[in-house]
Image 1 (cartoon, rainbow, N blue to C red):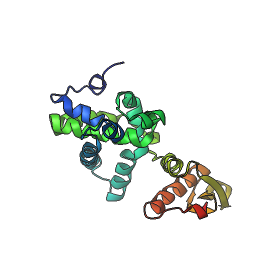
Image 2: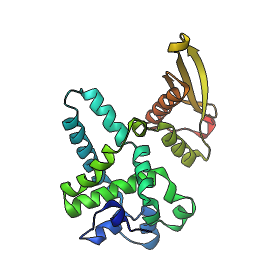
Image 3: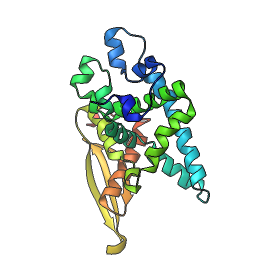
Image 4: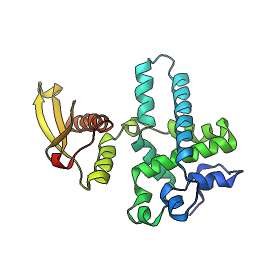
Length: 228
């Protein structure tokens, strides 16, 4: 298996930074170590956002703020970062505690996305902005429209599965309009609790919209056991 440095084509001067970026909190807690990747994740999130925003701004001089914001959000979404991490084989290089490892932590979308941001933060600290741009920009340029579809369904399913040990369900509520211009409305729910409604030109789009609204709702609300 090639090293992560070979995969990202960057050699660290300070290898402790790389080790920290690859260490999940569960491993640090289990071993009594003080360092794990959450601080680097915080930094990497900002570095990634800055590089992506600047790149989109320069490359799309005629586009408005709405386009730039929507495209940036899709590029830096948890689902998209997790796909990138999977392409790099990042999960194979991470250090987990025993419980997190046995529960499939190396394949968990949130762990992969967070670790990728931590690695980018580590590269930034170790080599500066130019080096981290060499990693981020080629990845951005290799993405097509399909890769930029934010996968809110996967993000919602992972969250609900982790909290409630079961996936959410989707129900088609209505179809309206002529055959060539139908509008589908879908609700996503858990037990008796409706989490979100969404509409779209097809069922897939409506489900994604419902999942996105559910994620927004769950950012400020909890689901009680009596609701499900």
